[in-house]
Image (cartoon, rainbow over all chains, first blue to last red; front, top):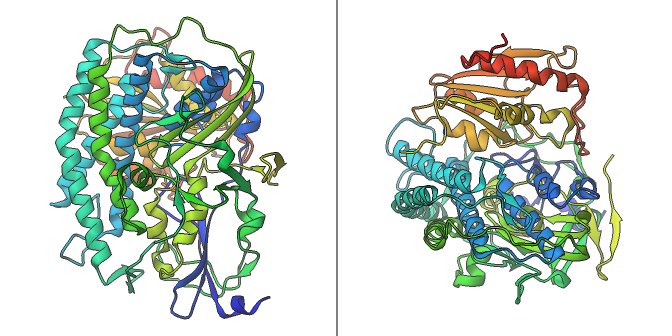
Length: 461
Length: 159
């Protein structure tokens, strides 16, 4: 064992809470409790959607993809559908695109509002030492909660109008959409979006004030202790990856904005820490204390996701990646990520209105001919709420020969792990939550080496 | 004002990628073939029950929530049971995610009448996907539909 390791203590938070899926934190900390090395990893078992997809029809696979996650069915449906279209070389009509764009915005609107609920309990009412309970019946929080609920309702209702179902969209299909919407449905979307517009602005402004207030505080309470908040909380020096400010890109684009040749992947074995004994425990840490001392953690064996790299480095995906890439946003750290997400409220609503205004309800939403594919590789990168969701496919004669999902949180695991360094370990989960992680689908085991060949497919158990 | 969720909501929970866990969504899919009253909505919530549905039912309109899901209560596969929120032991009945299913339900139970119709599964693979519902659970689907229809007061001509 090398000397540096023996000087550090190891603490484990497992599982992390208030986000989708199961993940954990294994943290090497110094005597002051500051993280020297952090590993944040998925412990949700691999599910093998890539295997299941082989031999299924190109219309079945997007339905399967939409089921791998409880909160991202829209993003996965769109990314998978468009990966199929990219493989078979099928362009969709303008009105089909507008419907998908509305769906995309509806999904983002709901997702930002849902994240507000998940993240608020870590935050303080500005000017007080009172943490926010989003479920309290008391003002002023009650009105905020109602506003969040209204925004979620608008997002989900618009999603249902366009997508055909409240949760798993049934109206999208390879080639476009099954049906256009009626003029009355379009008017309803316009009404709902216009109602949401001032609410989204108020909500955005409040949340930004709350996040800025948190970053300016000297301490945050965790498990009854006042933990100092560092100035550069959650900073990292990794790059960003985004394919579009709102929607996405695919290999059908004239100028694609995601580049498969820049993507490589390494095994968790080569990335994460080896076996470590837990040497620091804190029974007062919420919820139920940290892992007991003496227990062994073995991140490189336990991690359920490969580590995707872009230009050989981990990158951040998500709201800040989009804002940095397309809008000169420059706020770093965990609160910068949270603030970037809030800033996407307005575009989600404005784009929804613009797309609804431009939609011709009598326009065709399917092309005359849908090619069946010759086995070419196609990819689609959908800018999901949590970041760039890339699906890749090969379709031949209508059947899927190969399918792969590179989901946002898989990109963010190694990046966020770097962002943990320098923070007190008790605040690590606040950094994790800033990424709005969605872990259950972030399981992907196909490993691509430097030559971009498929080299290993690790199966657990 | 348009309301996403009406007076009675039937939520089919589960994931068709995990064998019998597809029970809830399948029941909802077949329920849609029936003419349900205007105040009833059947939703395939998949894994997103807590995120997309249960946390949005505090709208002042929804009075009744019927959850359809698989429940391991040690019975023969395909056996149905009716549970109340109080019957769900905290922590022991979770969806696949960090949000405990019972947490939003407990918050809701004073304003919404909540019932869980559970079916004992036979096969729920833990890691690998499997797209099929077992014969026993499949046979429970029509029975479940009758229970639901009765619960929402729809006389379908076959008691």
